Length: 136
Image 1 (spheres, one colour):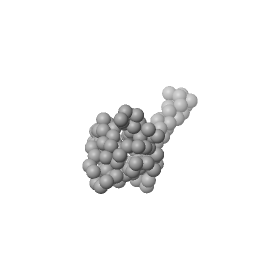
Image 2 (cartoon, helix red, strand yellow):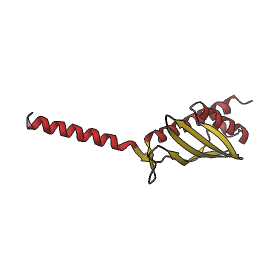
Image 3 (spheres, rainbow, N blue to C red):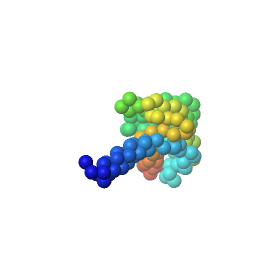
Image 4 (cartoon, helix red, strand yellow):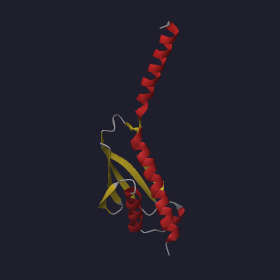
């Protein structure tokens, strides 16, 4: 094998190894996300129902902790995440509480967790918008 081919193979191998290293990212938390404009007249109970319904579609299981506070759990292919969801009639927040098998360390976590939270955030906003526009 020529030296140039060997060097190219080593470079490709190094690239592949480095590409696999960026599996973690800073933990994404949702902080005081304003409710969609159409949802701002919803009751606290209706907001809770919409959050639970939105998350349930993606496998999240919620348990009420107090008025305006839910604990969510997702178990996905051997991975586990527990979140705290706090909400009012104006905004909501989603904060990571703990995880297992998601490479959580030093404020970083597997990028899949962040994708789950971005999806949950979009789903909550969509559910709240629908609920706000269909209320009578």
